[in-house]
Amino acid sequence: MSDIENVKDAIKTAIQMEKDGYSFYKKAAAQTSSEMGRTVFDSLANDELLHLDVFEKMFREKVGKTEWDQLINSSKKYTDTPIFPKDLKTVEGANPDTNELDALNMAMTSENEAIEYYTKIKEKIVESELKEIINEIIDQEKNHYSILEQEFNHLSKTGYWYEMDYLGG
Image (cartoon, rainbow, N blue to C red; front, side, top):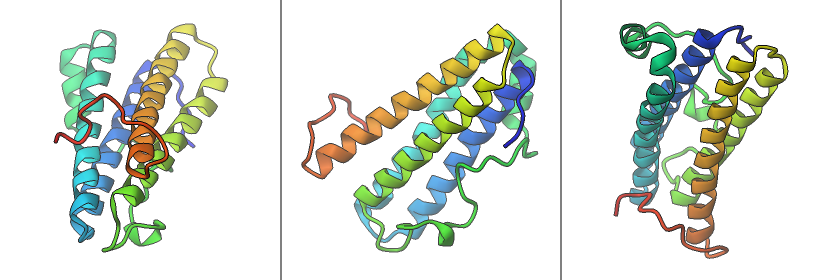
């Protein structure tokens, strides 16, 4: 796990995780032959871009527009986070037959791992401003997990419908 020592490190790590998530979900969408699985993965990839927008609103005042643009547009990988695997062959359930429930389950696992990742980082932090930023990121990840879980429950007929047009249709 990378150590986050300051606000910029937190921002860079959050950006990298969203970029990794986008890449992972796009690869998974391209790999599955299930139309609904592909739809869910594409939707999750687009969500990662939306998360970057949320982070931009949270962090822009901390680092400024110019530096934010440099961070977001950098092709250089800031950190290797253990959340999104690079090789889909290593992911249980990611195959040509991946369906929407498998896709949602993989996404929930990733969001939960992100929550755990940031929680461990937060435990090592002393600076209150940085702790506040990490708490905001954790809250975002928990919100993502909740949306995915509610959609999973709806599709598996074990829960209720979430009142949000999550999949755009």
